[in-house]
Length: 431
Image (cartoon, rainbow, N blue to C red):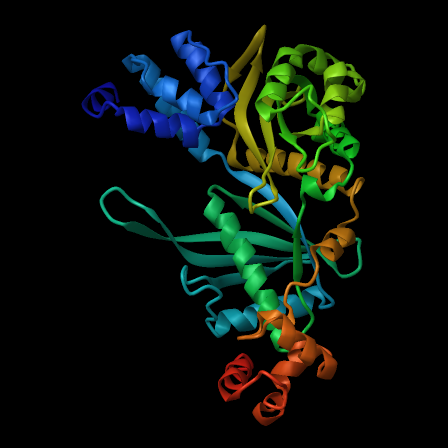
């Protein structure tokens, strides 16, 4: 490995990409501090990457960096979202099976299809296949065929299903999201009940105090006999419309405050007291900041095991959460040693913490409310060539989008603004 690294010593640009895009700002700062004795005090990913890419790394540091990247790439993430439908689980399974048999393509750009379905007592496991394309140094686009799977499960809420999804790459999440979006559209076009999907998102909890309390609960929940031992990171996000205040004016500034007072916050979490009692946390809420990520270390003395869990709530077009295991340890006399879990134990542990996130979230937000706030997934304006003016005219005549599609071409042309070409495009959706 040493010889390989010497022969392929990374360029400045390679190091910059790793520090900026592959690792988080926090992880990059920690690596530079531990390996180079160099702390970059800034809230900017770009600043950390720029400084770090111009440092001279020895071979041992590069080996550790490559191992860190390899370990990160192996981290499987778990998430969950909810779906509302009047259809039963049996009907959902039957519809998915039919669309698999018909080889329906749900996204032409990625050739997204259903490749398998499997039913258990309270869930349907669905496997989907797609082509992932990304930029490549040698070719304009590098195309790879991939699969991912998820489970649609019954819940205690009428018409509400929970979808559990584990994945390694963000494109797997995107593929599942695209499948549900197009599946919902096609069902509504054919007059069937919708399968409206909504993410479990912090933004859906309106109160900043509740968002902070949610993380407070997560830090002390300890599912499956895992007892909290350490909180090594708390990430923050600023509300889109914070109260006016000139005390703090950037997320980076508040992150530095959290970092400086983390030991005090950890102490509260470890003793079971509310994190809200910390003055910095109160200052966070006053200035429109709330937690959006955490890294915690827990121990299970029954199994003599330790685990580091990272929870991150995403934004910018992907309002969901990722939960992953970033460290696995064996407890030994006087400390702990890195020791990978078995596949099943890792999966069970990750899912316990994932389920804890969903259960705790449900105490602050009813799942049916998520669907209702998400709004309609398919409207009159989603029909070909239909704008707001013609939408109003259609609503005066038709009760739903499916009624429009079921109408005769001649009947559609009676609507002012719809000509033969538009009527034909609308009718084509019925096929």
